[in-house]
Length: 135
Image (cartoon, rainbow, N blue to C red; front, side, top):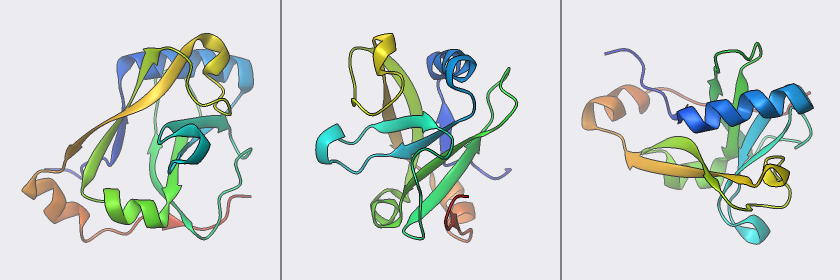
């Protein structure tokens, strides 16, 4: 078994990300921890949301047709709750968080999740996630 991913993209999310990248350029995600936008994956132009030492990067998502991988970030405190969980970014019709760039498209990103299998977790629990500031 290879290294399992912590985050993946549903086909509808990949399609929307290709459209958004054509409009906005390189993108990033930060998993909202609640507050005004619920707990949605928020999509921004890359670097617009300033990550810091309290954030962890879970995955660099590769999308066919997009040159630069899309980094998926979350706060380290939220990651402690979700570290046993595989996340799939998907898309549904509707209005999501007002700060996320898909909102004008009449779509919203959301997370579908499942617990890692014992085999997946045995691999992942020995790996650290990237932390730090974005430039």
